[in-house]
Image (tube, rainbow, N blue to C red; front, side, top):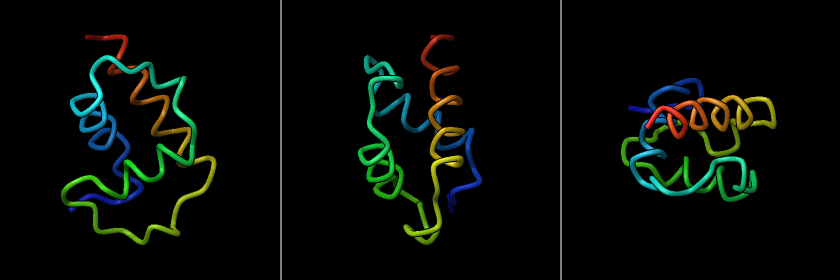
Length: 67
């Protein structure tokens, strides 16, 4: 089960699903959709906000840069 607060797990999953995509080029609307479509995501889709999405984006950026 994955929820909005599972930033690291989400970042890893996004990094694996979009390995060549620079996270800084992703719009928050797309990021939101991709997170809610992850296998095991069970949180309320309306439970995110800009701060949460930015946290996910920055964690994903760390994964992207560390590859």
